[in-house]
Length: 177
Image (cartoon, rainbow, N blue to C red; front, side, top):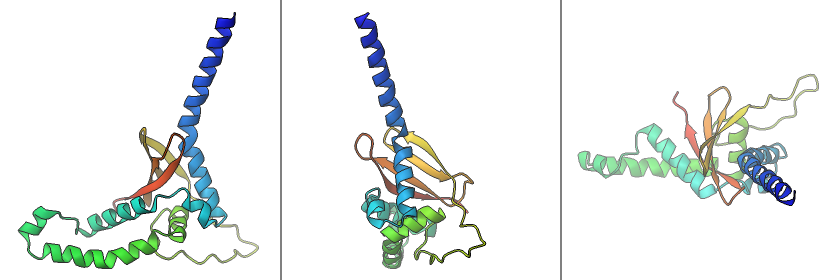
């Protein structure tokens, strides 16, 4: 009898651990959006890996502009490295502005990259508040999940595992237009 209760207890513990591990990115995403709604930049910053996110946004924008060629592109065209340097000089300040606590909050609210968050005016008393976007979450692998808008538009956000149950926003994927 004692063995059976021990086996049941172990089974429940393993099931609880599996459910908590599976649900952890959902919970983290909920906490991120709660911080956005509360306009709490400090709380939101706990869930963002800013250096990784900046690098991801720069890489995505450079690819979109066609300035992501590596050394092979520089060898084919002597002006390629100059063009890449000029593109980086222009893109760096824009990305730094977009990947700030206010910029990340605006990205999560709009589901798209915004350099300046739109001013939040109080809605008129007769109008309903702005509708929230619906997001879906899917695992890519053990350490990475993809958060996409339910309508398939805008950005896809990449959350990476930091520890067993903590996740941080570490990248974005621009959708094809």
